[in-house]
Amino acid sequence: MARTPDLLHEALLGEAAENAFFAISVYDDDGRMVAINRRAAELLGYSRDELLRHDIGDFTEGGFDRARLQSQEMREGVRRIHRKDGTEAIVAFVVAPATLSGLPYFVSVWWQLRADDPRASTAT
Image 1 (cartoon, rainbow, N blue to C red):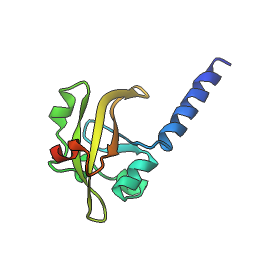
Image 2: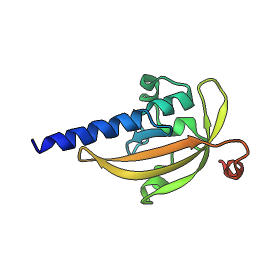
Image 3: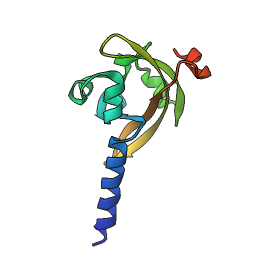
């Protein structure tokens, strides 16, 4: 009986993440995507199955910097992403280490910036 609240909590959290306005991705310390929500797939223009075969750095200028990511607790910034159709978008992001099912991962929440957002000019 004590597990019911935990299961409900996990189900609600999972549904909220899947249907969130924000893009959410989970990747391992090699940058391989292991989970991604619907919004992230829409922003990148790929199916979820396609994205799970990619490294997070495949969609950004400069790729994935493993040493930089692992050297910081939490990181935020602005990046230029490349979509499947060849277009680009500017996104702001926050990424932090997390332990999921006892294993170390990184969770990233990101969202597209409007062209007139002052942070867009700082994208790399």
